[in-house]
Image 1 (cartoon, rainbow, N blue to C red):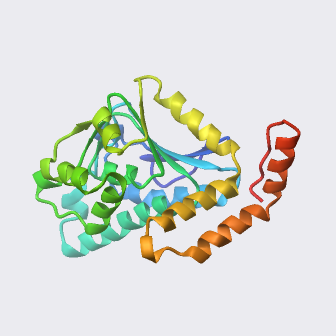
Image 2 (image 1 turned 180 degrees about the horizontal axis):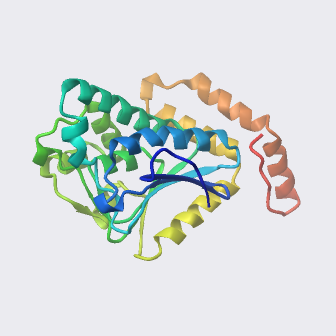
Image 3 (image 1 turned 60 degrees about the vertical axis):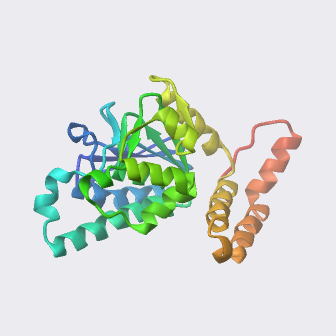
Length: 266
């Protein structure tokens, strides 16, 4: 994997084939996200967005114990103890999460171990979530006395519905991977030891498909769930772009010639 030069070692950005990687590398804290990690995420996304060879982006943790076990509360006394610090921290972390959600490239959360609090917030902002059997999910806000913003609650409601969202917040307990799958919180659960292969297989299928089509579907789904605020003109535009592309010609020819298409994203 080709890795990026970043101002912290606690995040790793990399490119491997058509897959871009956003790796949380803070295993001694179960990949809890600290300020320097939030700051590095937009830098990684800049590189992945700019590289046309990157067709899909995978988010994962290191260490085998966690995807992301929330925010690194141990640093809050230093970086989040005054109103000014809280505002600055929220701006930085908010921008990082916005950038992860705003990418037009498909994203996959590869979830092993703990996916708690802010880790769940990151995961539910991705397009697909694949978990190993031992993964644990939860939002412990009610045990910490935290207020949870309506925007974050809405994302969860849109994904799993109001009743399950309430159960997650009201109980503040940890849910198993199977429970998460039944809620619709994750797309699928795979046996321990098979997570890496399963995610790479799915990412590879996405990377082989027509990038403009995948992008158009992601944009259209994002607009459709807005309901009355849906931008129909934008949806029509991205669909028309697919039909006007060289990839559409390649897809038709490959089908007729009974061969695998080679898409360029143009």
